[in-house]
Each structure stands twice: as structure tokens, then as C-alpha cells.
Amino acid sequence: MTTTNPVVDAARVELLLHELRLPSIRLMWAKLAEQSDKEGWPAARFLAVLAEHEMADRGRRRFERHLLEARLPAGKTLATFEFEAVPMVSKAQVMALASGDAWLKKGANILLFGPPGGGKSHLSAALGLTLVENGWRVLFARTTDLVQQLQVARRELALESAIAKLDCYDLLILDDIAYVTKDQAETSVLFELIAARYEQWGKIFPDQAMTLAAIDRLVHHSTILEMNVESYRRREALDRKRGRGRPPTHATINKTENAEN
Ligand code: ADP
Ligand code: MG
Image 1 (cartoon, rainbow, N blue to C red):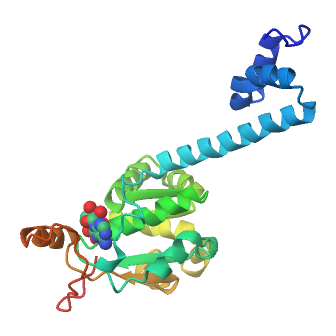
Image 2 (tube, rainbow, N blue to C red):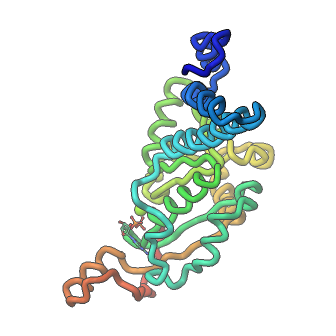
């Protein structure tokens, strides 16, 4: 600190940086000023380095915040997803969905169908993670949990604001939507959520009973990924038993049943 200009009140600078919400600059300015003085940097360079650091840290902090709020299940990434296990799903298409924002911008949907264990949660979480990395805001929720929250909100006459709060997310991942019981109250909060995200529906279908029409629209705006394979874990276990000791690379396409979930 010896070379710092004595007329600069460091405590005052810290206070100002705090007020201006520049935590990274606040943390590093004194040290950098010392280096800058020692090495005779032009003032503009000193300022540029500080600004670049604040910007980069801000991006990192935003990513961390978005990752936390997304509530994605841990460890489900595109890198760890074995596309060979679901040959009916095009890796190129998934990669395009992960990097492309056109479908998100136009409010389109992705529907994943398949029996339990086929990788629907993994693949949707992995897509969500990639989108968060690209700056989008995502929420991963078990649909039954979300429905329960919305029902509580409705009882407290706060359904509208609860749904409005979900507006901040560019993408809602409604995991296990098929497990929502066909109970009137449950489906109606879900309908209101879906309708709110397509506010134009409100004008087209003012009657809430037209759930079928809504679902029809949902499918109409969707990319459908059929994941009609036998449980990944089960196949993995079978492979281990056979002494191959590696994850399955071939899907068993289940033709007997057209899974609904
Ligand atoms: P679903 O949601 O369709 O019931 P999950 O995504 O929960 O299935 O998959 C069950 C388990 O198997 C998870 O631990 C998941 O990570 C793993 N898994 C499923 N499919 C794959 C795959 N193709 N590659 C790697 N892991 C997979
Ligand atoms: Mg699942």
C-alpha cells in the first residue's frame, strides 16, 4: 500500500464500491492499484482490468444463482448421457435443442415419452443444465410437487402470484407429469399454469374445462422424443451379471407397449 496516493481514502473507496455493488472490484482494487503503480500501468488499463473482473465474476455469480434455483438433479449431464442406449433419439437433434434458443423463444415444448428408467429425467435435466450454462433460467420440478405448491397457493388465494413467479423461468421442466392424478383440483392448477405460459390460450379457450384442447395445443407446439427403451439401470445390471461390466450400448426396443409417461 506504500505507493497508493495518500489523498485517496481507502475506506471511503470501499464504501462507495459497496454502495455501487461492485464486490469484485472492492476485493481487488487495492492490490491491483499497488501493482499498477509499481509497473507504471496507464490508468485506462487499470480501470479496464477491474471492469473485466467485475463483469466475469458477475456472470459466474449469475450462473451459480441460476443453477441453484433450477434445482436440477445432480450429475445428469449430456456428457454422461449415453445416446447409444436410446437409438431412436437423435443426438444431433438433442444437441441442437440444447444450444438453440429458437424453440425457447417461440415458447415451444419438448415432450419425452417412455417407460420408467429410460432416461427421461436424465435427458431433460441435462438439457436444462446446458440451457442454464447458456444463460437461460430453468426450473426442474417433479410435477406433483409443483402442483401441490400451486394448490396450497390457491387455498391461500395466491395462485395467480404463484404462477406469475414462475414467469421468470424461460423453461419449466415438469418431470413425471403423467404421475399427476386425474383429480380435478390437481389438473386445474396445472392447466392454469400451462395457460398462463400461453396467455393467448386464455383468449382462445376461456373455458377451463377444455383441458383436452389445451393438451392438444401443447402437443402441437412440441418436439417429441420417444424413449421407448427398457430401464437403463436394469440393462446395466444385466450386463454386469453377464460379466461385461459396462453400461448397455444397445437398446431393447419395447414394441409391446406404447408407454404413456
Ligand atoms: P426416467 O426418468 O425415464 O424414469 P431416469 O432418467 O431417471 O429415467 O434414468 C434412470 C437412471 O438411469 C438414472 O440414474 C439415469 O442417470 C440413468 N440413465 C438412463 N438412461 C441413461 C442413458 N442413456 N445414459 C446414461 N445414464 C442413463
Ligand atoms: Mg424420471
